[in-house]
Image 1 (cartoon, rainbow, N blue to C red):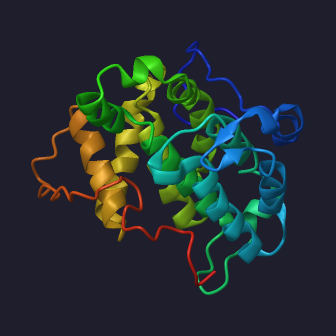
Image 2: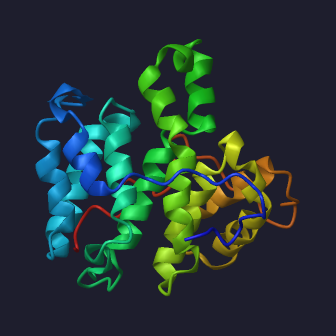
Length: 248
């Protein structure tokens, strides 16, 4: 599927490998997680395709701890993100969560947005200020950041999804990922989606991210009251709850 923002003759971002290939060809046991090696990850990832949304959301919560603990990037984070991006079009992603009546696809996209933010320029710059040379020496972080064009390609088809929550989650993920220099040509188009989040979203952290992105990309945001920067701000869904707690 082509991007709606593609330009004729422009280079195309690489496709995410099929999720089955990522699962089968990754040496999970050799990869670092927050709690040892990644031997348990194939089982956790497989549960994302279960028909029970409670199982799916619990699996994502486990992944957040294993490969995103304390907002850090681990060796296993990159292949896990590729797997999550690879199942966005899977029928299991359309499972509706009870009570919220929102497709699991929105939760998967929010997970990608949250994880990408943990490797964003803003977070890296903040860390570099305290630990000079951090990005230079952290090959795990650099490897994940290199994946952003691939993850972006997997996300953008859902900018026009039929479900509002999915569209917003896709827009948020795309905005965070598009800071990669190779994706700069998409930023003009994505500004529309950032404005839409600001105009319609009820999620304050998502609106704060959209506001920051527009400012960094040179858009006039003088008509929007500046967002107060909280000391615990962690980007998307930084209220500490996100999509990973009951009610499922």
